[in-house]
Each structure stands twice: as structure tokens, then as C-alpha cells.
Image 1 (cartoon, rainbow, N blue to C red):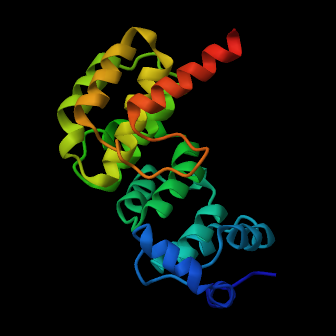
Image 2 (image 1 turned 30 degrees about the horizontal axis):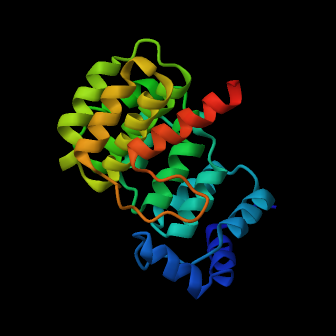
Image 3 (image 1 turned 135 degrees about the vertical axis):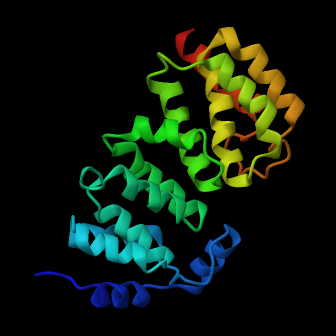
Length: 227
């Protein structure tokens, strides 16, 4: 039985919670949301399963919860690169950006071409996606990447970058320092000089996103595993 957009939105609205809405606002989300717990969104998606038409209709609402659900229902391979590009540029919060990146962008067959396009883009959400894909390559398939060139860009651009892009640029900085001993000293120095996320609040047991702390912690763990 096909689930309609109206039925789906009504279901999401019924699952809304004011505490979740408040948490979302603190993370940069606007008022176009119901405040559904992420676990409940996953449960709704599991019942509906893949539905490309519904997924795209949910995205077009601009509603945070509807968009997160739509992301889980999308088949990335059925999207053209331009459709992915439009979705990335229309993101309204970090939650949307991160889910779109994990479930759609990183699974798209043309993600490398998109990465290269976005790495030269001034749009903050496109730049965030480009640096995120670059971070993935640093950790998994770095062959062909100009790591010194990336460090040059991070050193000169990250301090003035939009917060959206700054977050994933920092992932690249840390990734280079963690995975490449040859470039670790420079990555640590750049992180110290820029000082970005130095005072970022971190929950007990979590690693700080401040690149020097992050790099040293992950390297220490890797060395402990091989000792």
C-alpha cells in the first residue's frame, strides 16, 4: 500500500516532541520541524522502505523531519549529479547536511566529480560537502590527493571559512595528521595556530574536535593497538 505525502507528514507530526524541537533549534534548525526523535524517523523509514517519489516530495517540504525521513527513502543511484547538487545547496541545518552526506552523497556513483566541483565552490553547504568527501578520501582512498596542497588551503582558508565548511575542513586537517606521519607535524602546527575548536565543549568520554588534541588522541590509540 502506497503511503501519501499527507499521511506521512501527519505521522511525523504525531511523533513530534517539544524537547526535541528545542534541541534542534540549539543545533541551528528553524521552526519548520515537528521534533521527531531520530530513532522514530528510522522506524517510519523501515516501514515505508524505499520510495523515490515520496522521498523527493518530503524533501521539497523543507521540514527538517520530513527531509531526514526522505533521505532514508532515497535511492542515490536514481539521482542525477545536478539533483544531488541542488539538494546539498538547499540544506537548512547541520543535521540535514550530515544525513544527506552519509546516506546519499557518499553513495552516489558520481561523488568524486561532485567533490571536485564543490571544493571550488563558495556556497557554504556545497563547500561542507566537498570537504566531507575529501575527508572520506583521506581516510580510505588518498591516492591522487595533493595532501600538502590541502594543508595549504586549510592553513589559508579555514580561519575565515563559513562555520558550515569549517567543520569538515577540520575533519580533513585531523585526518591528514592522523593517517600521514609525514604531514603530522605541520597539521598539528596549523591546528595550534588557527586555534579553531580549542574551547569546544565536549561530553565526558568524547574526543575534542580541536585538531591537535584529536590527532594526538587517535595516534596514541593506534600506537596502543599495535604495541
